Image: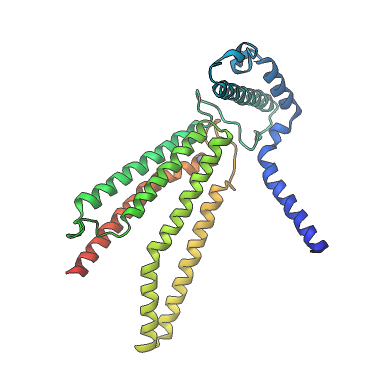
Length: 317
Ligand SMILES: [Zn+2]
């Protein structure tokens, strides 16, 4: 290991620090006036005319839930956390008000845009849309379940569905509903735990969907490629036709990658803008776009189940 390896290591460390560091420090929370506001709020529990109850009565609270040691600790931690998030929110709103009166545009705080709260909901629009997505997946899954279980014929011996992907789609539905559940929780209360749960379930769902789409496409593509090769070798070496097939496969592949890249770009929020009216930002629009797509997606899955069932029945006869 020479100097070069060390330099590479240092650079990669620096890049990592850049990526992870940028999550915590944003333009808004670097501002010293915001920082002193949060510090003052956390010690006194007073900000302007409002009182943050979570930051007060610290001495009185030490006796709460004394019977069980852990319970007290959890309660104190929760109180501290609520005090911090409330102070951050009110200081952010105060600073944003000041900035607006000076004609300045909104800035991010701790990696997030300033959102207006509705009662306990930190990002009400994204939370509501996540719940909508959850509902759409539930109804889509339910109608898929009713279709394959009761409307379409079952295999006479095993009483199972003709459609081979039934249980894989059930798992998909559960993973989707899980991901949207944690998404709505995360947009309601953004803390370390809810963020991790949201991101992990989203990645689990995306990974599973990728595997499932490859599995579903694998057999038809394999069958097509084999027939095509056999056709070229044993029937007719048609250069024009072969060129068309090759171009078509290349285009489909490019499109698939492009769609993936597009979806990723949206997920990573490359098109980022401050929330309109304090509620609608790029992320919430992304959650809105998936609501109708979910409906279309489940009707595609149902069509696939019907199509496969009818071809398999025809084959069996
Ligand atoms: Zn989200």
